[in-house]
Length: 114
Image (cartoon, rainbow, N blue to C red; front, side, top):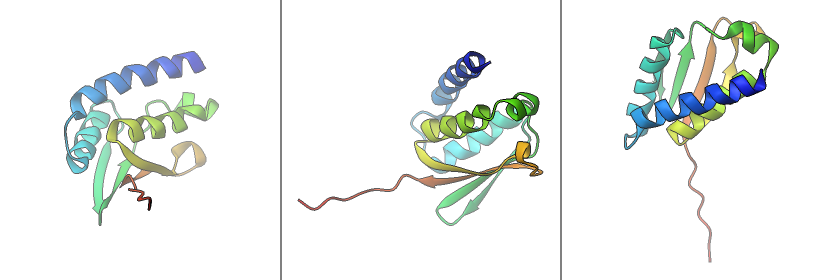
């Protein structure tokens, strides 16, 4: 099953990356929500300052995710990579939440003194 999840990750990564390439973070998040909705996740986005909240009201892979928790962490990692952002998964339907909720923040810029 882990191989299936990894293959799914690669496929979604390639699809999402093509559609999100060369966009600003706010546009990427909106497009991602539309893609996820078209896949059955019933996603919506809320802007919170310079961060975003991506909420998914349905989980088409709930059964798999409830057996293999890696599915949830792989989706978080997928979002982080295609959005080039920091992503936290604060709510999961498999953990008895009524939604999956992702907090998306621009990557921190670290400055070093020479």
